[in-house]
Length: 122
Image (cartoon, rainbow, N blue to C red):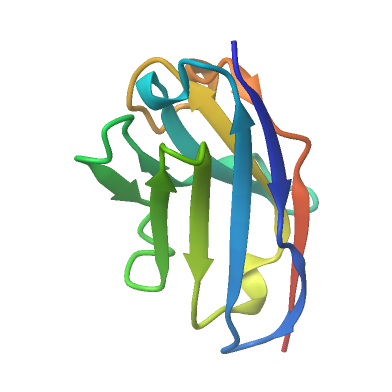
């Protein structure tokens, strides 16, 4: 069992940067793949970035590749999403999620944070 809490969202201008944090509780944190998903108004919740438990593998949505970086610190039970060169289309509620295997599919994740709002103005 793992509990997740996101923080770091806010309002930024296009081309700006923001770092999201996902704080986890649970003794088995390092065994979970952690992913970030986002949901814009009227849109499906979609995969943004993921990182495996041992941090050997990362994966990014094409729309954020080269701009976003996911990382984790298992000693501190933390996952981060560094977002650079933000665009208005990055606006949405960002969720961190934990699952047993690496996947881009929402259904593979069993534990979810409450979400944090990111708004990018043009």
